[in-house]
Length: 279
Ligand SMILES: Nc1ncnc2c1ncn2[C@@H]1O[C@H](COP(=O)(O)OP(=O)(O)OP(=O)(O)O)[C@@H](O)[C@H]1O
Ligand SMILES: [Mg+2]
Image 1 (cartoon, rainbow, N blue to C red):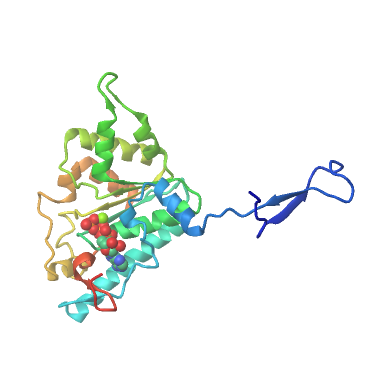
Image 2: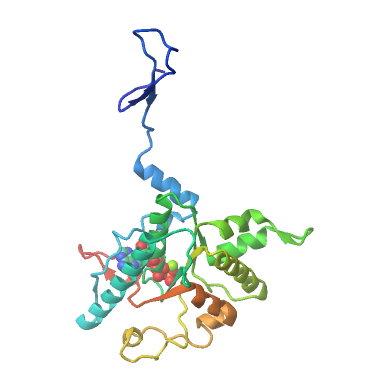
């Protein structure tokens, strides 16, 4: 089949003297057929971003939501919280460098169901991998399951096939931290991943549904008050971050991450689009 040279550019002529006079040989660069969307899709698949989050982008993260049955001042407070979180995560993505020297190289996005934590985490990951960095997304339960499945009973060791990319990725997103009941093995495994990445100064971005019992009610004028007004469930001792991941991991998370608490409604349930339909 004859190859089209449409859009091709002559890069250089062949070695001097190798072609016959009057008929110079040219080396052509032909643009590949894949579109920017294909490249994005491939980069997201490589980073293991699940299909349902691949649309997530800073551009489509709304911060002027119209929330039904919520007083205007509270809507404004929610939207401010979303805007603030978006700005922090966007700046984090823009300023990303693979090895961070300062104390808090990562981000911990905290908030209740559907406030957009995974959306923002994927938006950052997308931007960073499209700049050519290696990145990986794992759901917390999925990671533990894969590590467990790779455990070799004979050698009593975990296949590095699963763990190595997680330890080495320039940016690692761990989604829904604490979503499964903590077993000693799970906590040790997660502790190992976080400690190794922290010691090697790699950047980790985490999301969790679990706030800290410490932060609830700590400031009656702050966003915590907003969440209470909205009827959001305050964490109890059974579902605080400490209870879900243990004191050591919680302390490590706070050391390695800037904490971003997001207060808002469940986007899946509460937000109407401009056209009036459910989002
Ligand atoms: N502010 C927003 N603008 C546009 N889409 C949003 C926004 N917030 C959430 N979404 C969308 O709503 C859905 C739920 O958001 P997401 O999964 O990010 O929430 P979450 O905080 O991670 O929830 P969970 O705690 O259940 O994991 C996703 O499809 C996401 O794209
Ligand atoms: Mg999520």
